[in-house]
Length: 227
Length: 225
Image (cartoon, each protein chain N blue to C red):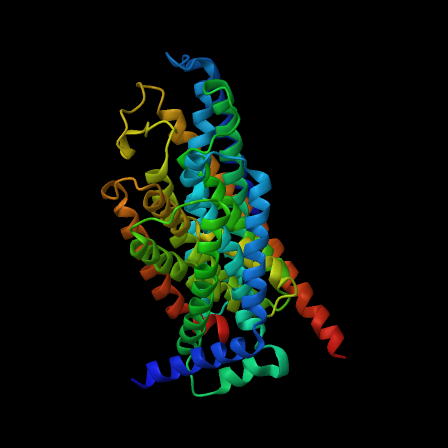
């Protein structure tokens, strides 16, 4: 059943992405001031939203573990964080490519770039901590606590660095107080968001299954050592 | 009242142990001096430029030197299973955490009070007339470092790579507190008008309040499960 869901999600995501790529590269015109490179926003923004959605979902899953002590929730939290970290890396890389063309530099210590980098470092720490702990319950407990700390900290990091310095373009989308995009330019962005979200869900399901298998193997190994 | 008395008992125990051994404070002060020395090779700046970056330099020293004290906080309890004994004692996790926080706080502030004049002498930085305000900033910033550091020290106490894990985990977490403390220190040392930077006080206080509450709420889960 789970395999069917994974395949269905991946296929639908693939179809939407293919259709959207056609629209983005063929139908949507170049942006007036940025030219062709503006198209990177169709991957940059959806990947950023997907990663942040993931980090917070993982925190709720971690809290769920702390309440229920169900290790499956810890596996889900770890899987979501892993996929979110991948999407956060995509966001940083696409942003960097855009920056090279528009600003002439790969990196600048601008507010959002810095906060995103800090966010990546916090979650690298999350996985380092997980790897350093052998006992599954301790690992789940401490990971959940770290996840809560990380999610609260991200908001503070974000705001404080924004007050400190910013160079990043202001909000583009209307829902974030921006001027909005031209008619026909915004729709592919939301379709891409949907596709990336489905792809992320499929990846999380695959990782959760692997984590479940690893738990079983660990349990068997411990069982074997006990005799 | 009982809560406070037991908390202070834990803090007094840690301070007494540190005063007798002086392991962490000695290492921390020496480390602060080493960083001060290294900075002299890294930069060759005019006095005005030094004043401009002095907030950042000071807080880097405080954060790096503070980590050595924080690393020892829970690790010192591993010997002879003292941590298990503390957990089995009629002291809650929150009291244990708060007691250790207070002890670490005092120790880090001592290290800072030694490093600050040394920094001023080595780099010819005139300490500001508003020294009391700079001290308030130091107290606020240090509480942020202490709360996060003590919490993560509790989390990493049983790990093989705890000396490595602690700085990796806490520095990214401390960014909002460090930015606030650096900005305020810079303004105070350069003598710039404080009015525009006042909201960094609010950031520091908010950071301290949020993470103190969060740590007190979650420390029992970290220590006991």
